[in-house]
Length: 375
Image (cartoon, rainbow, N blue to C red; front, side, top):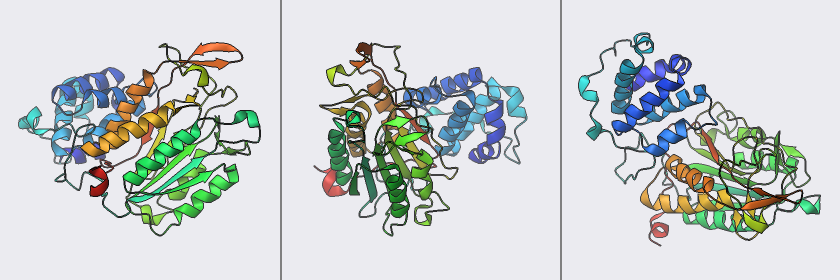
């Protein structure tokens, strides 16, 4: 089957696909209704390397199944005959001409699904409760001037959302770096994880990690690694989702006039969060901004990223949208927000774009329990 060919040749394709070919393939796949515009834009976003673009293209199509994979291979034969001829087909060398028929390929990411969805292509999400959602909110710090005004708005929004989605929600306030690490280890040992684990961390950020309230660094790997396949066997094969609201650098994006108004957070001393995604599958880490840049928070209404995430995840879950399609909408909305921040007494135009990183193998749809879905 074509998806097997893609898996066997994954490394070769990642190394061999050039940026122009990737863009041509995406144009072809959009024309054949295999990917939508949001997926295409996510794959070729400027912050990604060519290798990341190739990897995301292959994984995106492979998740959609045999017909989508067949179409990709046929398009590759047309766009880069050299790479195509060097593929290890192993008995799958003949891709049927009938494969290229757009009517057979639904756009899955970002589109609606229903209860009859193929369970092999979507993570199970029907346990009661759905799983555990941990919210870590660092609002107060050793230096009082670093207080993250407005973060309680994010806590309230996240709590309401994930309770409605059927999760058991626990909130941890003002944790030191060592306390965050200990919390993650303890929560990874929970005996009742259900179908999914969600962790939301909101704090200041610096180059090597997020800040504890003691202003010491907690590496992102210390947050995620307790839940990988080696350390948390109860979550093997289940999605582990992390939403990180923190600065990842001292710079402010400025290609578009955006901003946050007089209540903007002043985190000019915050550096970037270095991250490492566990090699194991089934992880999603959604960062509030791209590496090197600040993340915007309003003292009255909460952070741009978390508030947009809560809105689109609530709406999208009712329609059966998968999380990657929802995060694409979040990226679009946040990138268009407008306002200003005050740094060193200077008014600066503000802009930010969130960045999701993932090793998910299936569609992740946060299906709310029937009672909550009918509200």
